[in-house]
Length: 250
Ligand code: NAD
Ligand code: ZN
Image (cartoon, rainbow, N blue to C red; front, side):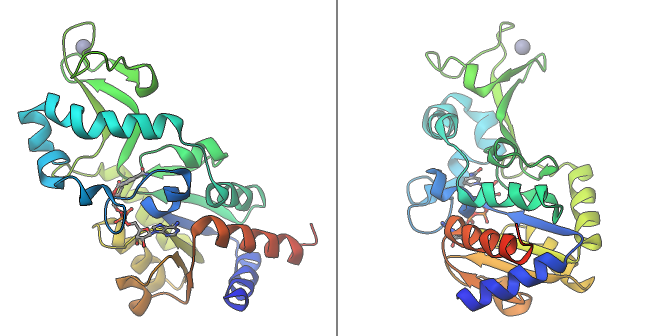
């Protein structure tokens, strides 16, 4: 694996426009469980019962009480891990230009990355469904469920629920970034949720190298990945950035 990481580091040092696509796996070492797989939220919750927009509209109190309250507790306290910090370092070194993330936890921005496309929205803010007033999730009082705005309207997190459309401008910007990049890092995503899963394919077809970092192989591994680095995102990014700094004599 070391050899693989060293070769990927060499490619990244030569890159002038790298992009990263990240999924729930990059935040697992920050204590945020993924949706699918071992320890994932879907082992306990039925996504269609709690994460579909129709479920929220039908019974916001139920979705707040079970899913959103728990996510708020976890995300309010989460901090960037070595994988987020590694990507922030790659931006500072001028290698990484943009992060496209499926995550809603805000940890890339907290680590210091400045160009982050939040494909599935964010959990940091809530919006009143009546008057559109915004409130930081951290400041929401969950003494009352569902939490309400001063106008009496119910707050909804600014993330995309199943059944909701991805804002077209995010999709367009992500596709442009994928078309323009020479290297794409695909970190901690099962590559199963559309349309995010097509981003690495667009990059690959346009000639980019695909560096995949995950605990296990994914549908992308066979089709498109030039490097498949199996391991924990935080550990791999730490080794990768150390090697890049060595090659750059930093
Ligand atoms: P996923 O839950 O489908 O898959 C997570 C992937 O990460 C798996 O392939 C798994 O093998 C890998 N993984 C787990 N731990 C890892 C580690 N330590 N290092 C490297 N890889 C690891 O996640 P997804 O593909 O991102 O899609 C699910 C959707 O869930 C996303 O759209 C996202 O909006 C949402 N989600 C977000 C968060 C968050 O914001 N942190 C958390 C859960 C779910
Ligand atoms: Zn309101």
